[in-house]
Image (cartoon, rainbow, N blue to C red):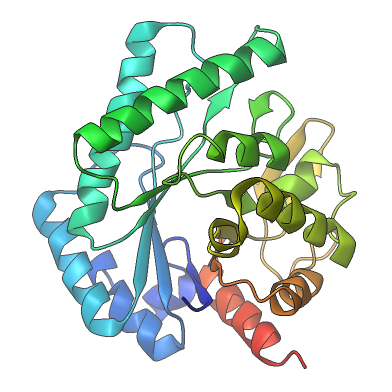
Length: 283
């Protein structure tokens, strides 16, 4: 595998260059010098099968690796079994669309702690993730990866160690390291070479080199406050981090091959290309 760079969604420049629909995104990205694309279903699944197939065909034709983000309201720590069933179905519906789009990574937020003790919430989350993994195998979707994401607020389940430990459940679980979230959760006390390195070292220890190396990454600058993440920024915005350069150096030094998706506020493709250029210019 090789390292990939791309945006989450369509940035300002996509529309300024005359493109209008997401089915055109793979062609745009190839011409722009990128090779990955993440489509977000964060607010629900609204795409028909024909559109998904068209995006998949265009992605294949243009050499673009596709991932999707499942709805934000998945919560495997919800104590209601009925709500858990809904979360299972959100994952399965996403995998159906992902297959039509010829992609292989589905990103999802695992859980919110709510009023439970954190240990109880984590244990319930792990139990529910095991259950959804069983359903994935039963439905024949185990040729794709589901990618629990690190989170940016204290009441969410999703420190990097929690996510890596959840991924130990099964080989189809691959971590999504959102380094803007990790930075926000730590109130800006994250972003050095050693900070990034310790995340990957823990992942390699728990999951082995291949799964750690081929992880999914979200990256952007993020404004944070006392309760963690507030909003995503563009690279040109000052005052907040994290810095991509030390992450690029760690990836290079450790011979990692992640897919890196830029989640900047409005310049996702532009900032993804900046990251690609930083990485390629490293000695």
